Length: 78
Image (cartoon, rainbow, N blue to C red; front, side, top):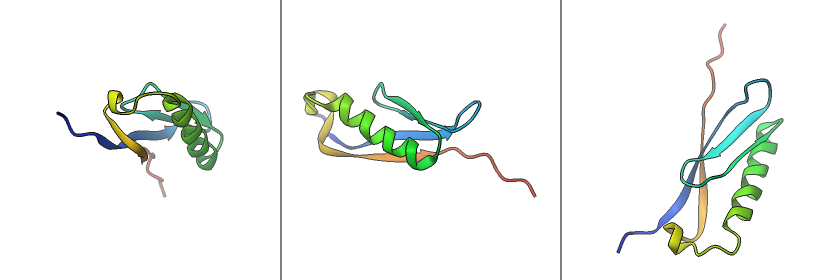
């Protein structure tokens, strides 16, 4: 029996034209927003909708998993 994951990994990165994009690494969830706060809120909602009614154990997830976000940012130049 494999261990169930307690986290869902996602990455947030700058959009091509503006705003930010969030993408889950283990689930087929991608969303975007104009600001970081909006993007994170959209990600939470998208993950909740994706998991709604799903058997989390069948997806390899423990009950009430946490979304762990990594951010890709370009360095600021002086």
